[in-house]
Image (cartoon, rainbow over all chains, first blue to last red; front, side, top):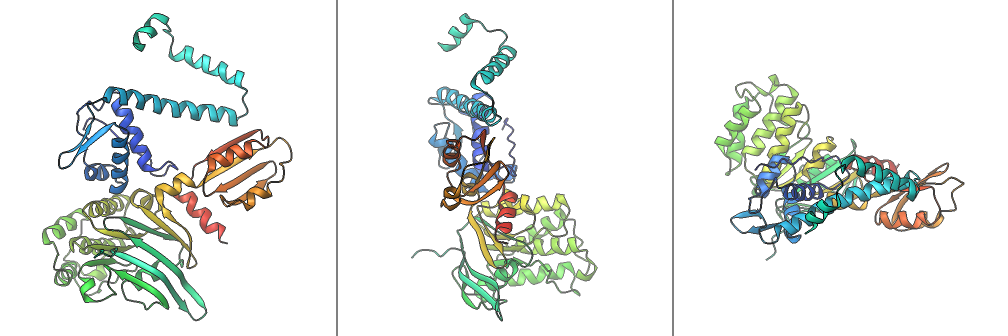
Length: 141
Length: 295
């Protein structure tokens, strides 16, 4: 498998959620291709040294979210049917929770809405310097 | 017929005179899952193991392995690694393994050789000439080579270096993936955190926290609110069923929530604090808090 998963067992975030997040991220980035096979529950549990039931739970949720499909006896695969859509949603989800966390942190530090907006604009200018209306229109199609 | 849980403990109590080493412990470990028993020294972990293995008679309650009371028909399907190594001093490592082979029909000699190499064990040596870590390793090789249905491991990593500690964890996870049921106690909270489905935290014989590890991490949150004035009266929160405890330090208030941390944060946010945040807790946080709380 070309994807590398890293989990932090000492985090307060449940391990199965960490696995879900990383699989979604890998699918979204194309590190895991459509139709590509994921390691079996047993393999991934061994590789990450985590409880097999935890991996199984992550796979169940990923299947429910339409990111992977499991066929008995064959294994789990990145879902072909609608996978780009699911992957796109997955990226958006990962990004949304990062943004949510940042906004929450800013609020807890007592920043006003206007101060935060300034920071966001600053970050946008830094990471999206090629801001171009035409290009954006293209990628939205 | 419903198959009984491979490990089942109900209302287990062990008293010595008027002091209870263990009070009313109940737990069920389904097949293929790993259950962690945590606690400070003297919390009752070893007492639990000894009752399960029939080495100690409970004052009340029951401890069953494979649905059966302790006995020969159970022992050949179970492997137990006690905290204090119980191997005969005069035996050679190879003799300990031979004894295990005789006691367990499912004993896997190939596996025993493989594990002996993995732990770099010299089985020609007598037990009394082994270091603490080597004794632990020998007990583990015997236990895993026995290919039991149930593994009961009391501090299985004691005396081992970090590399072999990780080996033990790999073996436990591999066994569980193959359907073996594991009950594990360890002071290495990081190890437990990787491996277990459920945990029970004991303190002086009593259960102070119990649950599925993922659920505990999702539910047990710290809600912190900082006020720029004297905080309003928060008695209602202190009495709230969702709140375990409330600690106030000047203008900072911390609520230890057992559920609905986000909702509690919104509710306290309505009281006009300068900031609120919700903090995650890992197993070590939960452990220290649960044990501290019962002081």
